[in-house]
Amino acid sequence: MNEFFFESKSRFDFEETVSKLSEIIVSGGWKVIYTHDLEETMRKNGFEVLPVKVIELCKPDYAYRILSDDEQRIYSNMMPCRISIYRKADGFTYISRLNTAMLASQIGGVVEEVMTNSFGDAETFVKAISE
Image (cartoon, rainbow, N blue to C red):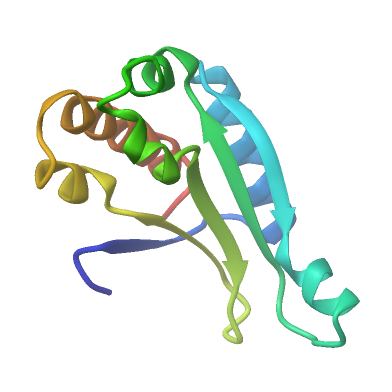
């Protein structure tokens, strides 16, 4: 693991991790925008991979602070936030996410504040289901 990405082992199997994490996100005041099924996408393209889903999540009041300001909109390519859930060959399910707080610390200002808060929320969600 490096400082830009974090990986945690889930206490649950793959499908239960996806379900529980989605519920925790919503109960934490966030919205689940979309869940990408990368295993299915790969299958449709002739490749077999272990299960992988990426949850896109958004907290509208955080997003508004960036999207409502022309000077901050350049950072919209980091939105919405994403959390990845995948099973490895060891049979366990893992959760990964980008260290957006570290990245945002290089930017400063509103982006740093919003991304640091977002990162803290995401870490709380992940800790609720990880070992």
